[in-house]
Length: 129
Image (cartoon, rainbow, N blue to C red; front, side, top):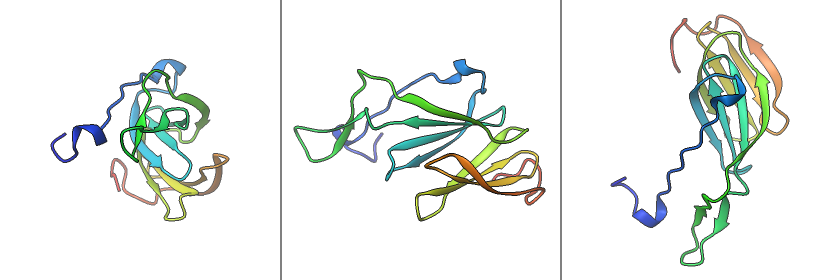
């Protein structure tokens, strides 16, 4: 990537579609929890724990990924009946929202992955916010 110095950019390919939840369609990173929320084409949400990947760099004060270990999927939730299209985090970094292709929006607690609220037919079908 030309926007970041090579020491500050790290890309990791990690296949996570083997659990039947479908291919990833949306990603959301919550830095305060070191969690990656993955929305899937079959309406599932996966939560990956990235803490074991984050290690302080000895060369700099930045955090780098240790690619010798893979992130663990610590939770899979059936979130929507249709493809998940978009994820967005609330500024408190504890709550996030998901939107699916059926027009529904759901509000989630990122710590427990419990659904807090649901709104049907809120946005146009196939729209992405």
